[in-house]
Amino acid sequence: MNTNNRKYVKQRLLLVAAGGFGGCVAKTATSPLERIRVLAQTGNSRGIIATAVSILETEGWKGFWRGNGTNCLRIFPAKGILFATNDFYKDLLRSSFKLKDQRDPTSLSFFSGSFAGMTASVSTYPLDFARTRLAGVTGRDIGLVGILKEAIRDGGYRSLYRGCGPTIIGAMPYEGIKFGVYGFVTNYYADSVNKNSSIIFYMSCGALAGMTAGLVVYPNDTVRKIMQISGSQGEHHGQKIYTSMIDCYKTTFRKGGIGRFYHGVTPYIIRCMPNAAIQFSVYESIKRLILEK
Image (cartoon, rainbow, N blue to C red; front, side, top):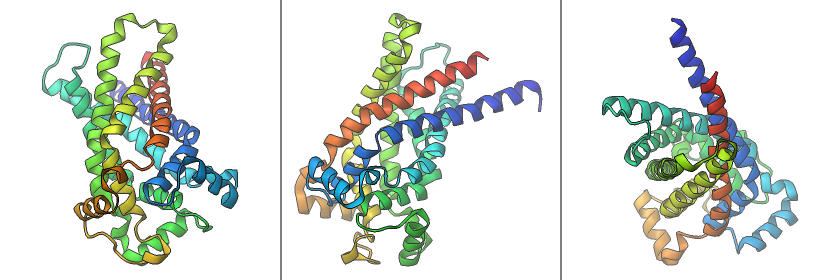
């Protein structure tokens, strides 16, 4: 391997680490809202304040960060792969279509983000499954290993990929829209951004991109969470509640109408904006340092 190749590989690995680090910082900072959102989506919430009080009473303040260790185990590789492969797919598409302009068209950012979202989701899905189970169950002292053993015992190894279909279907448009909006806004305002205020600029663009993408795909995310949590509740223990993603959509709509798909959307948006803002700003800042070396 020559010097240029070694440098390229080193840069890519550092970018994976940068994306993973940014993802972990963002997830940890917004974990309390994520916990409330999961409980709201899966039907165990009576509202933001009531849910917060219930968590405090039954689990203490640490309950807001329940599952966050598993979250970070998943987030570090997931966001690392996401941001690094987004750059990889972007370079690949730019080369394939022989694009000369330094500013990427929005469509290129959309497709590179979509492919990156699919790659990251499939690679780390079992950890996402375990994280959702941990966050969505109250009053039980069970950890990551216990959750995985329980799922395998009840449904075999295939159960670790329950809800993977909606995850991929949701991840591709979500990441596509997120990176597409981010690319569009950063390109549009690039000439007017002062280098000294660039981190604020990246945070603002990231917040807008995350909010936009989240609102579009939120109903699909609700279905994904419901499918993941099915089988972990006492009255349904060990049973397959939904036969398919379509069945889950139909059943959820029949029980609560359109509004049921948006349970927990308020804490989600409150969480989503700073989450995406931190992710993009940390990644872009570290990326700039890496590429300037």
